[in-house]
Amino acid sequence: TQKIVVRVINKKFNKVYTTINGIDTKEIDIKDTTKKLKNKFACGGTAKKGVIELQGNHKAGIKDYLVQLGFPPETIDVM
Image (cartoon, rainbow, N blue to C red; front, side, top):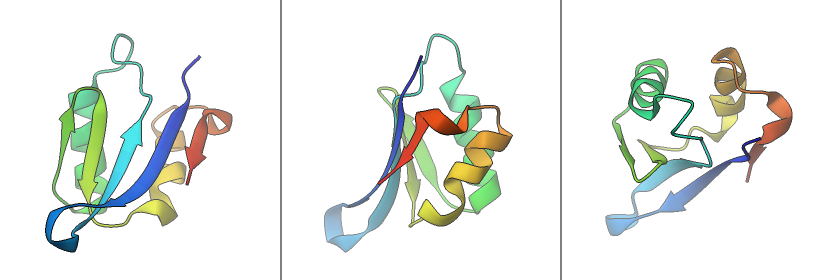
């Protein structure tokens, strides 16, 4: 059972990033998931050490899209 946490953080030069933690990298291909998220939200991003970072604030639609990708809604926590 995984617990996915979605946060919006500020990085260098006051840039806003949406981070997604807690995806089990043994079961799910994190690079493929990152690619799908980047295409859906039309933004840049990367996957580092099991954390997906997307450029911009995507808190509004991220949970719905993760549910579409097959993640159970009760495991997704948007902060």
